[in-house]
Image 1: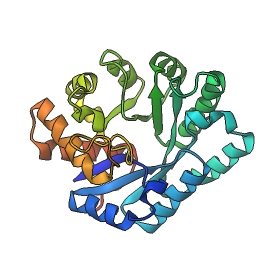
Image 2: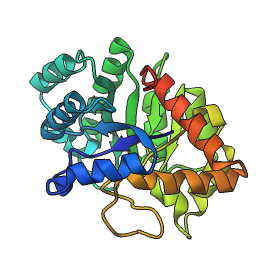
Image 3: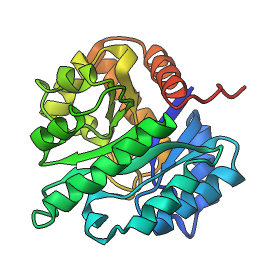
Length: 256
């Protein structure tokens, strides 16, 4: 019933217990996981996991904090990987002016190239945005026919409608459960439900009451429960709708 639309099972933090992590996710009701790549190593690992598990799909891309290292040959590799039947998205890509204020123009260049690949292959973008809301919007607004996800959305509630009008979904993760998570809680209430997705970003951003600990996909249930409470709808309804949204966006047939 649950879909974790953004998880890094390709992280080395799961080297010792990945089968157990996956098992706990399934026990919690997670029926599909999108493993997101962000550099050469994690892109390859995401594909390996997708090939191994029926209920795992992959995305491939270059994270903005690695943009300075991206070469022309890297796009050739990415293009080949995007032809893989279980690669369903482009990214994690985007803009991050928190960690990298020096190579902002290179970030924008690399982001644009991945937007163009997303349009060419008709596969949704997985968009990372940190301290770069206006710049991210400005770049995206140059394009038509966009599909994608504002991953672990950290922008303002006022900008939600702007990103949705560009053709994007809003995905929320652990911060919506934080006691001081005022903005994500506001966002959770106003996103049109057909544009809403849930995620963990595991191993990062573990939800309350596990904040600060290694996250894992089973905890997407806590995210769903919190959003259902905020929207005053049954948890099962929220889980069902966000799962349906994910299957549709990624063009994946629902698993029986």
